Length: 270
Image (cartoon, rainbow, N blue to C red; front, side, top):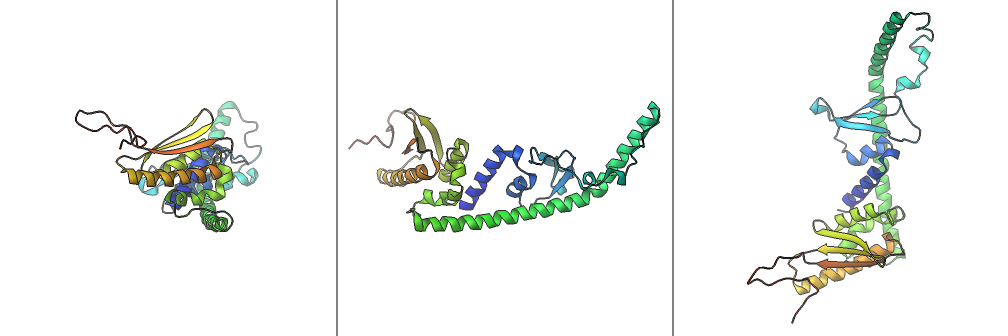
């Protein structure tokens, strides 16, 4: 669960900023090693990787996985143009001949791109493999960092909700205050239970976890665990300007004659 949560958060962060992420990084966390991706560099590469991954779709031949268009250059685009085309090839041609020659050049270019496609594919797969290996090393490093933190900070690893969030600690500075990533973390931590997250006035970060059918004893135990998790989560992932309130509630039940009405876990008549 912890590794799954980390992958989900990294994916969410990348998708939010996908325009500035290189294709290998996106595919390394969204596609398994068994997935095949054929790449087509279209030659409009930007150094900062803006929109590096233009599109990705199912391959027309279903058994070949996916086909991805990249804005970057092919090997063909990086070689001197004079290797393939004469500089003055279109000079001194009339309109008709110029059009015919231009179409011929385009066909030759398409054939050259097909020739270099296996090289582009191999280079991309090598970079993708390296990206996956780097992710694995970072995951191991994150575990080491988290274990080191236990020697410095008192962290309750017996709390199941805190335990699920521990792999996120090395990323705390990047996550803190990011409402979308925080929502994703809480959703995964309390899954499959439904949660509601909102910020109220005065500035209070309120989280409600809906859990039906708890006895009063079970509710008290869960509320204690959730409250401790709330303190931990506030310390590491929420802005210091916010207060917090984490609460377990029973989903609202409609009134039926002859049936007891559950108002809430906080309503208890002896």
